[in-house]
Image (cartoon, rainbow, N blue to C red; front, side, top):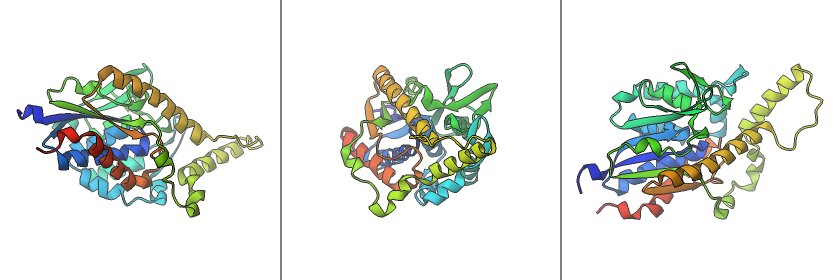
Length: 300
């Protein structure tokens, strides 16, 4: 097999904290195959993981993210006090800049594309030049949660809105294989049974939701709107469930259209979109799913 045939492309999908499973997939490829990752395309969390790996800083990021507690994650959320999003995302991105340093995409040793959505034209945008962090920041800008990013005259938000599993940017690659990771796999009962112990039941109404709810209630009180009955489902659930429902549907069509050589699916109920404190659990799950599905590319 030629060197080119031993190179592979990764298409890393969107899905919030489940995207940490993609670290496990990358680790499996590094440890168990002769293949070298030559190209990465990522949407949202896939862009973040893929960009960090392409910059050669995944070890540092993995060490940091696996040590985060619920409280640590909450502290990284910075309220924007803006009509365009609850959080600015600048505190998270500044942490990443401090950790990884700034770099341009064209200077990376691995071909990299971050997928974002131009909210004004409704078109998919491929970011493959310029600041790596700016591209990642645009790709993870979940509407109504994080503020959008202005870049080259465009107003950019989460790439997962239009392309949750970005196989298309890898079609121009000359690699021998494409592996796609979808974070919208079918729910699995065994994962539903793997909940935290009963003493932590209260924490299922997690810190993020409480913070957002308190913020919204504060605004309602100032506006004189706090006499309304509390809704059966809060705005946090509405946002996350709506995004996931849309992305799950689009992901199925995208995968069918572009048909990658291998598809790894992470169950949609593996963890909540914002449960980043479960990093190690997700990394282990990604490694296990890669081990199960990529048997034929093991080291010879």
